[in-house]
Image (cartoon, rainbow, N blue to C red; front, side, top):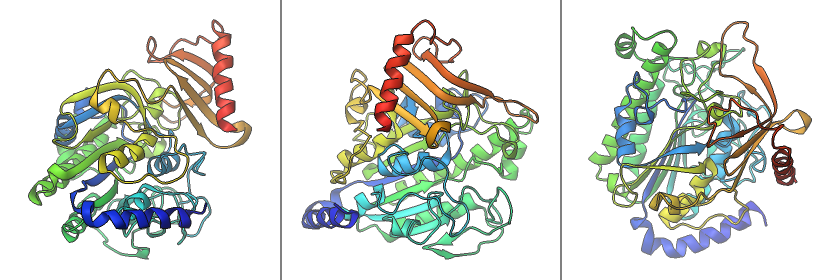
Length: 447
């Protein structure tokens, strides 16, 4: 069944029900931070960062301690969140194009969260980073978003809005597929203003906003007042902390806008980082933190894939609660479908609704087994977790950044996460039968 036929049917069902239920359905804002470390919020134990608004969001909802991204790198992680499918299944095994017209994208045939909500009568908006397609048929307006504002590539300078990675220097700021110019204006502020205008324009119908931050991804560009506030922290933590504070301040303003518009009680808010913190040269070889966990961005170790995640909706979601069950970014799509009473797309999903876990700390995890893979073929990096056992088939330890640092290569590392969350003790020699079982699970997953 084609994507068009599937959603034509879903749209027909949704339109029939829309007159009766659309107005009552909750709004949804999915906030995705970029390269924010596993423990880099006050509610996750950080003592040197200033994140009162994210902490307040957690106090008004549920925060997860074993929440996993779809991948330890940007594009696959985003494809997973937006489709409810593992990145390899969604056709995004690695990072996508950052140059206009280049290949590498979430296939146009994939059904996104935006298409799910649009079929149910929602107004849909992408605001911020995209990085899963830079051709007309793979940019946001072709993937279910009524409105789009932001950059299509992997990152931008927050003032010039030029692609910040490698040459040639290319301006990358678009509204609904057309290049727009706001030279000198701070991108996090532009995002806030765009979201505010969109919400005000759609007070008569439910809305879905994918609010994909460019922060705290490099270049670290915290505002002057925050740079001054954190000047005594060690470098590069001081730069990272200032950028996170700039991000959090606007998160507070976004939520305050919901309050002013009397929408907060009927809005689902999700906060998640796309992967662990970066130790790349462009990120000053660090700044973020995974606490006592090994690994960072690009690594299958916990610090690369375990991320902060919060779900909040006053009156519907329990408040000031913590959940330790294993959860995954693919779970947001079915969770939101249940919360908002909208039909799921008729495609195989890897995600499962988190509502049983949200409603009870005693509920079992929806995932007896979770898979990760970046890349294709024999050089692909991968990992699998079954219960407390985790096998890394191939990856690297990106914990330490710095000029001349050689990253440790990892092959067949077996750990018990419950007993050894730091992943310091390889148990593969003691338990070859578990290694064989987990390898078999991975091979079956690939098939």
